[in-house]
Image 1: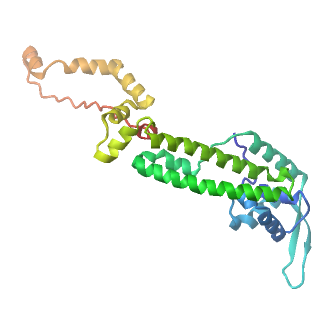
Image 2: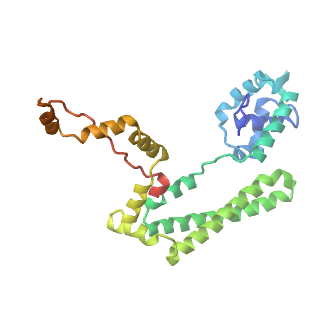
Length: 272
């Protein structure tokens, strides 16, 4: 579970990683982070940079040590990391390294609606992605090899991770494409028939019908089993005419009960 932090913007983590080396003023910090490619390692917006610096100072993660002026440039405040900031950097690093959290890559979003495409088109697009991915892998491998000649491997481990993830994705794509091309992918004929006839196959309709929420089922069962519901059901079995004949009185009352049927809703995975 993610911890609630005083300054939760990942830009704060990047700033701490810069200031642990030496004191710097904000412009110098930003220049260093860009040079190190930190904006590729984590998602943050440069527009919030100075707000993050102020919040970090407010919560004593960093502190001002001096103000400097170079030539006719505006005065700049130099900051250093505090003991609180050092503890935050270590604790944050521990959390990020040890605890998996849900991430939502755009490719996964596309795969979740892959059924919207004709299987032949899907295969073409996946093949196009694989080609681009293989080019990126080759370029990343060359860049990593070049950096390793000058930079210790410890400071390139995130690039190794990126390369490993891309290789894993490429391997998975090759396997998926092989199944689509050979026709061995399960349900391929049904998928193709849906796009070529425009009609939802019976098996998918049946699947959608079976996919009901447990909460809806429980509600229906509970209502049907209550004494009040049973009494109302028993009352409805007596016709108004029979009641009138028994009592000799004209029955004008109307039963307004209108039980609602539970409408099953297909989950997104079922629809896929």
